[in-house]
Image 1 (tube, rainbow, N blue to C red):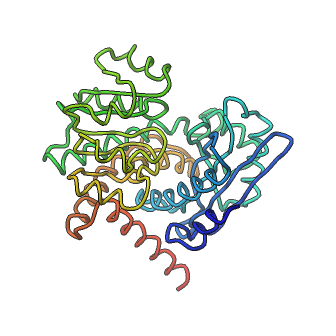
Image 2: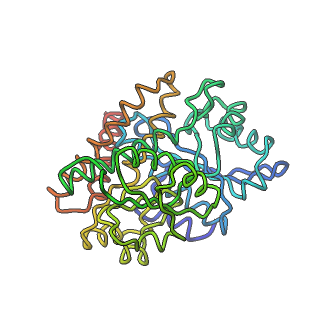
Length: 360
């Protein structure tokens, strides 16, 4: 580990993680990082990302950032769970195997329930079925294996509720009818989000790096428009809402000045590339619905597996994302701070109260 990673972990406000585990199984080619940010509210729940990182340091930093985001997400979703995340380093199309997933499951099991895993970018329900053969701490499994199935369904539904709350706050009406919404990334979550938007009467513009993902949406919904890339999408004339639904860092020093949308509300984790971007958005009059608030539907779904899954119960909880998002906008306005800062304050307060109660 380099000085950069250690500095982030031990010496910055963004660090403060309880535990970071480096995992390796040479026989299967597994190289993974499991980061536990907080167990103040309960076991750390967060998905497993399988991605070909440019460097090992980038993978560790991503795990740290994602784990912290899960602590805040779970706190604001009202779950009695802490935050953690895992990343498996490598191209899943090349490296993924049953042997590797079982090896990864054994590492999760070795943590004794401090970390509960699920799907994320590059991992799917079928993968969690394999992982669960080596650990009891895997959620996001198929219904045939006692799980909730694809958590993307309620992730998209929660993002849609966040958009409705954004419309209510900004335009006084919780509908997307007549609004132009740009969705960047129409894969696992994005294509479900498009369905909700069209049903609500929105005009939808999409982009994705995968041609097959675009084709799936365009073949089913010819009224949807596709553009070449994200750079073109964020500059689309008349765009009301921009929904980043791919990898993190979508809001940065290059994209924020170019945004034409009045609202940013999407499913991607860690959309803010660095501290200060939230203020840049506010200075431009762009309403930002914090990612870890609106994309919590999926974690609500997989968390329910720990208690015996009930879809209707989960959907009812995910519907409350509308109220939580409005609460954050109200708090932000009252405190004179960006919504991202307001969300952090509410989440930190809940975690602090839990820690105090535990030590009292």
